[in-house]
Image (cartoon, rainbow, N blue to C red; front, side):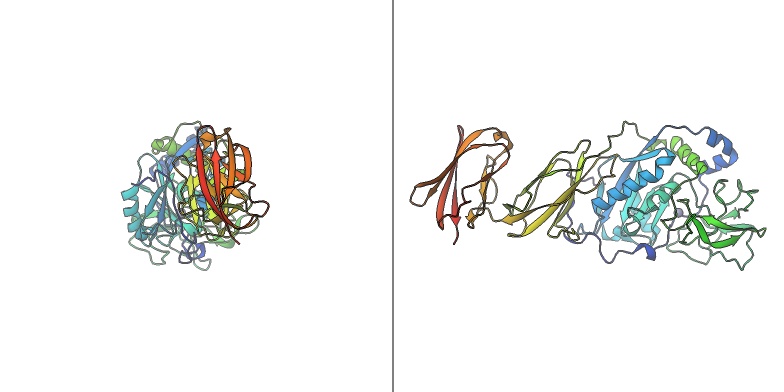
Length: 510
Ligand SMILES: [Zn+2]
């Protein structure tokens, strides 16, 4: 496994590529039908499960793995991942289950895994990269042509196209990982039809994973009883869970205003009903679903307290983040060096990390930089000269991601001098080629703060033409030397304090 310690990823172009499959092109879920061991225990004594349910919040560590192409491109944007993580925790809030990033995100560059079309490739990916004692979650452009799937022994996989801020695929797959089957278990790969008598039993194959929904049934390996509307067989039929009503719809379906299916179904006795689309574990559209049932919650919690106890972490959680970051520098179209511009923003209470985005466009559709960083400053590499750049940040921590990107600030790049880096003290002055009226910036190291100094500018004949006493109150000081237009020519700036003398040649163009 490669955990990226610097925790930065660079996307050179569009964050989402046109080749990524859209949600509408994917099967909802590739998780095979099956009855998990905890679910079997539940079916033997369901009342106990619900009665024994504890009320404390269970804290579950997640290891996120973000797939990209071999060249590191097309990974899910950190901003989108945080939206998905915020949604996941909101979907599980009523269950008293809270997820947190146990480790840094694992960045994996592999085109094959990034767009894998078979479950077998997904198995290989997970077995090669899984971290023990944590819920492993993989994000890739294509996950075996599904929105997502869960491998009971390995982890969950989510397609980029189904990881939007209002999608519930992540919650659905974790539901599987915590022992929940589909409420329509047995109907996977089959198409319900009102015109065909509904059978009492369905056979399903739970050792084989389908690449896509198929109508042909492979060699059957288990049998599910079809659930009756009156609840008479709910404890032995379908998902074995009684507070999830009958549902035979194993394709993506739409709901009415109450969350019920538009498609009517008929149980084996002939009683008609509509499926409950409010359940995350159904295949209803994402706008329909908003809950796990009480018994589903009890089963998930018991799974976490027994079979998956290794995933549980101890608190306390890091605090929520309520403040918006204030961007400090450079802002307001300020000139800044094309190489080595330092972006600075105010630290936000409870934030331990920030998403940082830099773009030439105010809509940020194309980004020069899309990274996460731990501090509240970041040194940029080389940008194009004489271009407006826009930047913004989003705070988060391992527990809380329901934050927003700040409003953007902007700066304009300029060539500093032949030597673009600050000197060994961290001192520099720019731009060295000044247009009339353009301000001059003096950059000084943080250790010089509150120091008193003096700046002088001499013309080519050695005559003092400007001077100013300075109190260094920021790492970037604007000098007013060029505010009134000066004659074109070569000048020399001298900075002086008790410990330092620095000089810089300046040219004022025509
Ligand atoms: Zn599923």
